[in-house]
Image (cartoon, rainbow, N blue to C red; front, side, top):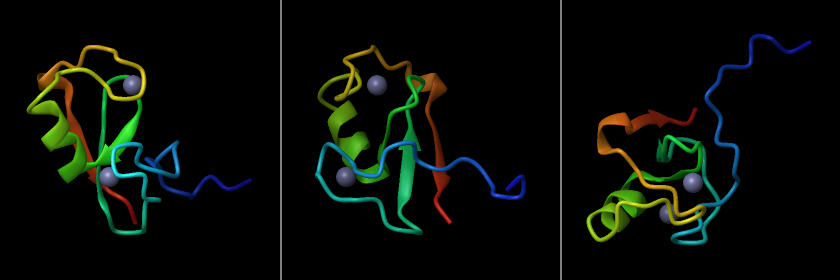
Length: 70
Ligand SMILES: [Zn+2]
Ligand SMILES: [Zn+2]
């Protein structure tokens, strides 16, 4: 058992916008569809399109939240 491992942990290893793997401490943002991107990458993307770049689900800006990986 490993119950002390603290979520959230990115379900994906790589940000599909910049194609870089997530590094510990990177600021990341989870979308409501649970896809995850770097904060800087997805914020720039959402200025142009309010859809998730992975699944094209519409993104409600009110539901956005960000976390630090650690
Ligand atoms: Zn990125
Ligand atoms: Zn998505």
